[in-house]
Amino acid sequence: MARHIELGDDDGCFACGKGNSFGLQLEFETEDDEYVTWFAPEKRHQGYVGIVHGGIVSTVLDEVMARYVHVLGYDAVTGEITVRFKRPARVGSRIRFAGRIDDENSRMILTSAKAVDEDGLIVAQATAKMIKVTGNEAKDNGEPGAGR
Image (cartoon, rainbow, N blue to C red):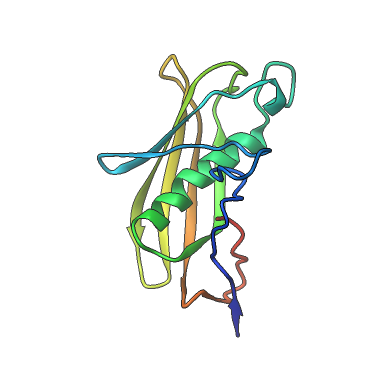
């Protein structure tokens, strides 16, 4: 059974929407085969004192992967994401997030991303399965399409 998913954009995305005053309002650029954004987390993004909340780091990793897929012309949603935290992301630091496409088949696009701090150290890495949708209709394969 197919599930209908609208993939519209009203500029309210939490990660990139310029119309979302509570959002991160990230900006992106393509560098070779990567899609990149820089993010300087503030105190309002922390979990433990001085450490960026893991959900924020995960959100930005998801965004560089999902948005890159979209920029390349695919209609797809995040079906599964795995994040591995390597070290704390520090509030007040500048972090580079880069996503890439690793493989593709008829149903999904496999992506990966990493977050690197100002010292060149990996903060977190992620992989994701982006589920292709056709005509804004997702195939119900037991995996919810939750990401952008």
